[in-house]
Length: 455
Image 1: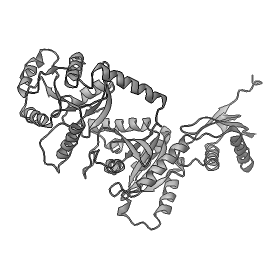
Image 2 (image 1 turned 180 degrees about the vertical axis):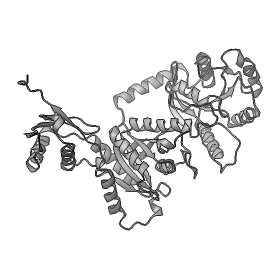
Image 3 (image 1 turned 90 degrees about the vertical axis):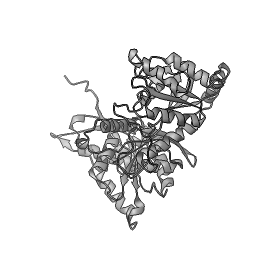
Image 4 (image 1 turned 45 degrees about the vertical axis):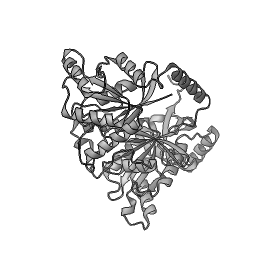
């Protein structure tokens, strides 16, 4: 029987470091300043033979419900409500603070089994704080160091004591048996989708609307999202794993270290995605940064869908035609890219967005047989022969598709270095139109066969 643990505590006690330690990866952003984590982040944790769902939360702070800190606290309270047990962290080097005492009372009122973890207790500096933690009335504190991994065995024992039913040998054997059955008849894997865009384009609001709940922190402030948060979405039978990312500004404008980490995390999410939704603010469409993001995604080889968000704020007359012309003119490298006018606030256009994502994923995985490819090549050469370079014509012999994701083709020819870039673009466009490959980058590699009679 699997279970869920939520990590809670005041800001800057090491919750994200503990989360990274238990999932075995550096997923959550970590920095010395307090309040780095805002959304709740989930991951698959492992400790010995225990496997569980682990949730990293924002630091508990007293704040007005309408403020950003108040909305962060609401996210933490939701995580506490969903958890089977809580890991309540304190900083053993600092000792107890009034905030620790206030939220210990809050945790007790939740009624959830609570494990008191005295973090940063390595060396003698944390001994006093660990002893002081008994005053919280949450049981025996577990001396721990999330940074160095000290105290993992003590934490294991504490989890087993707090959740005896879920961690019993019988429960673990039953879970292993269920995993084996799922492996035989595994469900269809969800499409990995990353949502990228400038700050305040409405990325988190859109994903919340897809989910049908306020899972991600939103608000009028720009730059709320910091970590790239993955959520599972089942939208009318289409399964997606959607990554919410931080807004991407021009690199020259990024000076803050934390914003650099957030931008790097967003780009990492893009590299793991299969389809990327580039979200554009309809009130400021197709700005230079939007085009840079779309070009970056295309160069990374991901399928692209353009979400024209906040379209309810602009006039609709002739919108589709105007957007199509602008996109094909400004983004010729992904000609035919799907453009979906939508509103994350009202939910307008979400069905068309998911439909476009599924179609783009299918095109991204498309394979073309060799015979039709070579018939197209012959037809393209007959219509427009490659130009002669230095008095000698380049011979195009053979084309094949070695792989998809994105569609990648290899063209065997003589004098590959002499074929002009303009002619390569002509062949790429011919492939896109003939085999219906809109909105995905096409890789066309030229390969020259060795001349056995040379030298």
